[in-house]
Length: 154
Image (cartoon, rainbow, N blue to C red; front, side):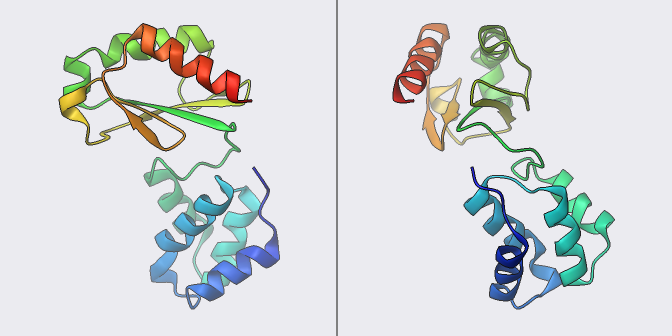
């Protein structure tokens, strides 16, 4: 993923008319284009929107999709909501962590592993999202196949 520069940040702020009440939308735009928010971008947003850095950090920390570290090329999200838990997502999560040798929010070998708290695919639990695509009824074998596909695509 590319790193956002000051000029691009200013352009995104201008697209939203430099309105501090549109901070979430501004952050979504940045995440959509770059995948993450460097600390210098957070400082710049605070300055350009006349907000405190604490205000911007508070919003960034509140929403799980606003990450402050560069993610891997592939992002795997495992649903942690109740319906998925009832259908085995806890075991799938432990298997994924062990297989990938990482914890949630870690990045290794260009893969980032993250929790998500509902993918809206409860009827096909446990659900996983891989690079924005929701996949249902994921067990260990299906998880292994998903990993093989990711690694084969590289």
